[in-house]
Image (tube, rainbow, N blue to C red; front, side, top):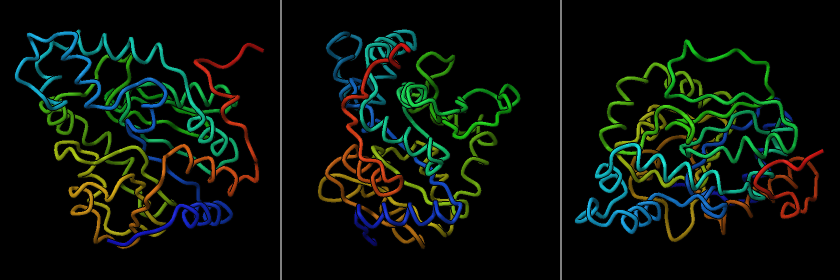
Length: 277
């Protein structure tokens, strides 16, 4: 397992940008938790408290979600997202998208906090729900794209049980595949707030199928080490680096400063929606 430093990653992202190579971000629940959208186990705990009898005996996120019909879990997610507000992390990503340092954001999250921050910073973007058949996608000349890998809180399909993940992988393999196919050659990738601990999630399978990361895959993690499943799947791949950070927002704030020369008071830009003009 090869490691990198946050400062080094910021410099490499800047270098790639100067060479015309924009960065792709893959973000997970850890990038929304501070905004009021809980991570998987916290959401499971909330639902167990709300529905103790139907969820009795279940502890893991996938099992708790499977214990409830879709309507109950989707309603809880809707409520959480609607009451959440984008944070400095999302604003930092929006600034980098505006400067064309970041071109794509792939997210396993159901929330629209990235889109709200993009609107706030007037980023021209396209949002794509990969659970929707490709023939329903709309063409776009956007500066940035947001891909929801597991669905959106206001969409028709939310992937949050083991069975749904397996069915989703079989049904939408052709839809998701092209997004990852050229991943190793188009530019740097940064993974933030995504644990990669779920072996049923096709995202890890698709990442593992990339043989070489010519511009680097930088996996941000907190704590002592990334999850063993991630190290086993990606640890030996050329170009993969594991980067320990204090927090995703701290990292992206530093990355904005390095890549765009902007010193921002991101906390002043946080909010549930773009301010009125």
